[in-house]
Length: 311
Image 1 (cartoon, rainbow, N blue to C red):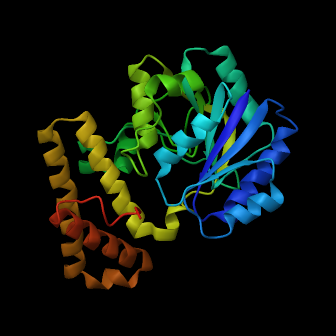
Image 2: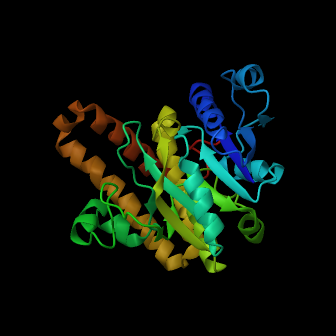
């Protein structure tokens, strides 16, 4: 049996569309035994919408935003399925596609976590799996590494056609075995948002459980609709999680150099715009300017756990 756990915060319309897509898919996938929505303190009428339109959905509302990892853990512990599909509220199911994930996991017991091919609404592929953050990715542009070493760094448009063991999956849609969740003790709640799925996947590998990207299964992902509501604060929150991740997996010296490189990049970007101010005519460049200015100030303050998306 499959349980579905969804985490939401002030994404009522997106969540409603996702729940409609799940209802359509349940006719094709009778193994879906329940849907659980964990609400991190929404104020946009999400509770009333679910009560009115989806009375069969189990709904849990936190009084405040507890973060993604904590909400996933709460939803997972309320579920009963041997497999649990974790979905962002900005995803939508395509009828019949998750059956491919269920079939694959049924025939591959060593696989602990499976992720589908994430696609845009027009079915163009998105990046669905990732390599773990490293100093190399901070020094060299990822796009350059993808061009120079395409076999190692695949682009979202030229991914594999067969199941592929990967370091980490994008957390918008993940199918997780309950035994793996229990083995790992759930998601690390020190990560408020971002990189909790990367940490989870790495710990699964450490316990001998495979993490697999399954390109034959597709899930629509309306990328950036949630964090995009507070883009600059979201990028600061990513940096908070990134430094926690580095501290968990690397030495103090490595982490210090990593921080120095990121702060240096922010400073160089701001200096470039000071010398070339005409670049600020671009809306995207102005947004980047605001972000790098706040990022540099955040570093100068000793990179505290504030300034991001936390309440």
